[in-house]
Length: 323
Image (cartoon, rainbow, N blue to C red; front, side, top):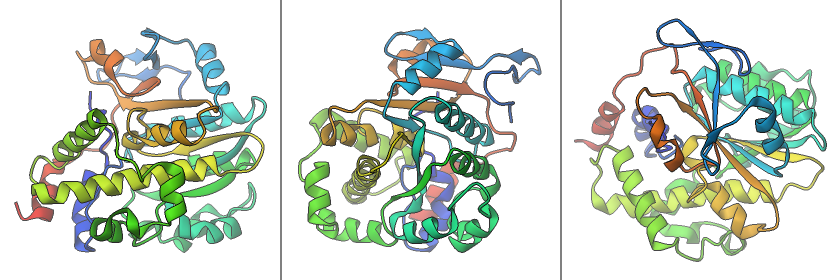
């Protein structure tokens, strides 16, 4: 099952052209109704409780998510079904007290927050105008049309839209200067001033190397690892710093949603008294379901693959790295 959490490989060619390496990001009917399998037969959505080792019914799922203060919703970025499911989850949580106070997006950098607040002030906000204002088409993210349902669900629920990723240009400085490129207070309160436990650092390093098809020079991996940690810490800081009523939901790649070294790791360090649930939206791959209990999420929601054909992501890595 392709749940290493690396969904950014498709963006490497475009990112490399701008001098920025792509990093970990990582069509069915809405969940709750049967969806078509690859053979055209109906299949019900499958939601797996990793710790409990069992599949959950719908009501059990909603009770589990509603009990959390922070809900991580992972995705494979180019899969429209994942975004439709995220939109449905936001609406379901909004209908259950205390509702949803904020929906944070990895796809928006924190320096865009004033623009986000200006343009997304209510359910009637012009989302297409917003996408144009933030330069979505040039950002390297998939078509805004597949993300639009999630933004619409956030606005309909009355939630504030939070920009969650590092400010533009920060990743380049982190690769060059390390965490000295960040606000010292951010580094201290998120725990970036302390190394990851050795087993987590080794796992993250290996995942980064495999995500780049083992074609990156070894000297580049420490910088990539620092950037990944900084992005996870920044997103955690944005969630923990929200001051308002209701749950906080994060829309992000599966690699950031994973509970071992992703955003939940930093939330547990910053606000250990608050509850976090990590949901991985992952594409079902036949013959691998016995491995579900080893996946690094609290809950797995198995989905179909996107309707479009994907190229080999390693082609982009080769082009970006000269190899």
